[in-house]
Length: 401
Image 1 (cartoon, rainbow, N blue to C red):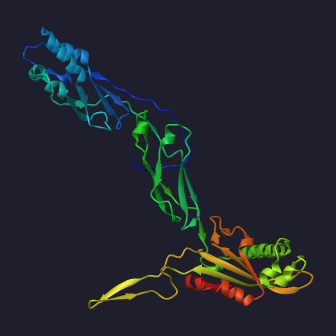
Image 2 (cartoon, rainbow, N blue to C red):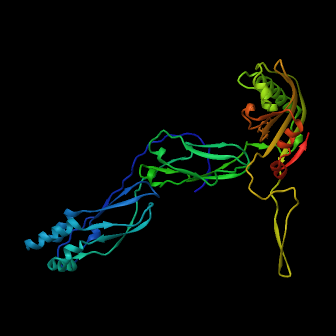
């Protein structure tokens, strides 16, 4: 069964259903065997299409039929033991009204093997053949949407989003249901994910409920997407980041628990001077946008039995690199002084995974600018070690804005 379902929360309460049919036929030993199938009662546990049959033998009536007119006290006692031990079973499950299912009888073999008199008596007077039984009067279950209390929690940016499922039911019965998704990682917009209930449905069917569906489909949409083109970086967004960077550089330089001049120059003399540092004339001098290179497209061609491998252009990569999808570097110059010494210091601020949200706004995954910048008195070295690093040159196309 399958259908589309809304993902919300729901509560229901269960009840069982039982149908009982009893056939009683009494036989007097006139050569006609007593058929065990005439002395069974069938109770159904669960609901239509999910029922199981619980079969019992009406032992008092069966004993009376077996011993009617019998005067042998020993044989009557053995017959009582026989009746007490015999069982009726079926292997059929998920029974529906109208189904025919087979019932068979389990004989007390040990008792019969140890009592030839009883064994002969049973063989002569008891019909132990299997029988076919038609199911009826099984109660219809109350249909419920088992996905109504499942929350599908999707986080991340397309095509790297992830999914988790949460059963939010506060009903103790339904809270036991387990669910799985056909895919939980590397999700993209417009993907269709199948959510399946993996629990045994008899868990709720035995209490009077049937699921409207055991699986549903959820379409992934509304996820943010990575910026692939520098043109999508609006001036408004870049100005917003610029203002945040200038504020961060100003505050970091003034932080008395930190020495910017020493950090940028590695000159230990600044450690002996007053830590009264300020940054002024902070200027944005360069901006770089780096986007991931596409995966290399490798093909094999066979010519006259010789296999030759052709690859795509050098501006693609093949190995599994786990870096950001894109990076933006903003490079600054500033005058930093502590009242004694003054230096021109360069700063580079890194923003990772710039994305476009569903509402069209821009964002990024950088959460702490104080951990996302570097400072140096050598601006060219700073750019080469970061923007033009060997790793970046290998995995990214570098665009100077």
